[in-house]
Amino acid sequence: MLKSALVALLFTAASLGAAFAESTETHQGTAQSEIHAAAEAEVPHHHGEISDGHEQHEATHADEHVEEHEAHSITHLMMHLILQLAVIIVAAKIGGYIFQKFLKMPSVLGELASGMVIGPYALGKLIDIPTLGLLFPLNTVHDFAASPQLYGIATLASIILLFLAGLETDLAAFIRYSVVGSFVGLGGLVAAFVIGDLVAVMWPGNGIDSFMDPAALFLGVISVATSVGITARILAEKRKMASPEGVTILAGAVFDDVFGIITLAIVMGMAKVSAGEGVAWGPICMIALKAIGFFVVVTALGLIFSRKITALIKRFKSKDMIVAVCFGLALLLASLAEMAGLAMIIGAYIMGLALSRTDLAHEIEHHLEGVYNILVPIFFCVMGMMVDFIAMKPVLAFGAVYSILAVFSKVVGCGVPAFMMKFNLRGSLRIGLGMLPRGEVALIVAGIGLAGGVIGPEMFGVAIMMTVITTMLAPPLLVKSFEGGSGLRTEMAGGEEDIEVIELEFPSYDITEFLLNRFVRALQAEEFFVHHLHTEQPTYRVLKDDIAFTLVEEDNKLIINVPHANQHVARMILLEELLSLTDLLESTKQMKDVDKMGTDLMQGMFA
Image 1 (cartoon, rainbow, N blue to C red):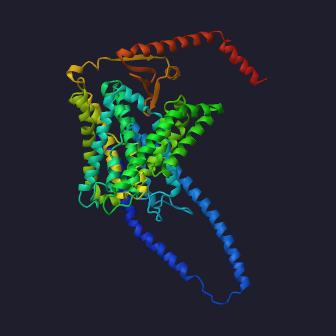
Image 2 (image 1 turned 180 degrees about the vertical axis):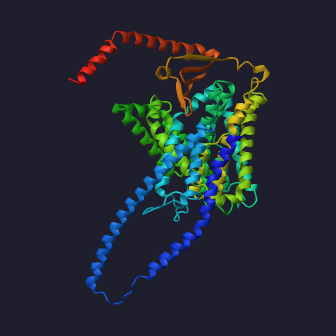
Image 3 (image 1 turned 60 degrees about the horizontal axis):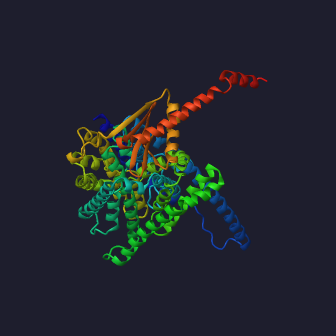
């Protein structure tokens, strides 16, 4: 109860700031108009008193003044941007830390809340800095909450986010492992999209009167994506990652993302068709074919030629160069997707998906981890800054209904296919709740819709509201749902008992991390797909053909959750690495005495 109260306090703090800012806005606008009027009154008007030579001198002086002013403006803009980024990074990281450490909730919620508090609709409108002006002014030219420079950095962050999401995806392995995952993902996609679209159409006063209205379509797409990172953390903590429900949730979430990206591509194209006078089915069909064609063709080409491309890149023989070139290719494909009428994140996701099958995937993730940790919180904070609390007031009831139906759509849409396959009611509920939290992709889609003018600030706020509610509800409900027996039907029961937990405890964290890295490299050498999930604890998903297990680092322990039928594979590779570690320790004994080495180093310092 205390956690809920704290969360509510943090999210309403921004609305209080917005209300106070609204009361001062009129006074500021009046004062600015008076200053402009006074300035215009002081301008002298002379007619016919200036010679031609004087006019030329004045013109030259004016040109010099314009150039000087433009240079000053660029410096001024960059200085303002750097200050904004400083405030955003600090606020986002502190907000994320508070939510994760004290409220036991995903850090993304804290980053969103930080953006709401410091944004131009709340405190950002009140903080006036000498010579710079307002810290986060509203962009009056585009009626947007962020400047083009700041939104550009947020866009780059979204590209990195989807690029890494693609790197962590191996669609073929998930298809080979479990057919039920594809049905669960597709069921959740259809139910969430249709319900999200219909509630927008049927709600009175929205100004949306057609199922094919771009705003309704966007609200359908926003409710589709699942945040697998949040669910994966809960499954890892409950040690249910390798359970039938855990595997199905992870597989279904991947299909959700893939089908959601394709749906976004189609809707993006449809939004660019002139709406208002009926439905132009011909152009819409062409757009759908183009979107699906682009995704399928480019993904197929990427998967076919990815190994040849990486072999060519490896000739640079520099890890930094390899990672930089791969990321450059992701940016290139992102821009090509935008030129094709799709969203940039689609191109970035495709490039990540293509590289996920190569041995460079883990190296790219490792090198971009630092950039990810800095830029991605900026993206979520900027998304929070775009929430206009004043504009949201008329649609709060709609947002509540939309959020409740978003919960219902995932639980039913994913639970029904699971029940039809091999799960009982308990297992189906677990899968539905595991697919419940929305997150990164939903916010990116909402930001694209707002930037493109497809949805307004009030609908963007509704999307944020739905994301926050589903993300807050999922962890406690999912944890509660795993209390009880097996989630499989009686005739298929025993799957839970088939999961074997292998625990290895080491003297220190450093030794545990060292062995974990060696184990991951050994698995990759055996052509396993090893995916690092973005969870609080280092968690890896290991896949090859019909073999699937999870690897978790917990303090000084290495925990492997593996089906009993495949436990010999994990044990054999672990045993080989332990023997290698023993050989390594034996070889260190043949080295010069460590104390003698230390003495030699000390003597060299004073030589």
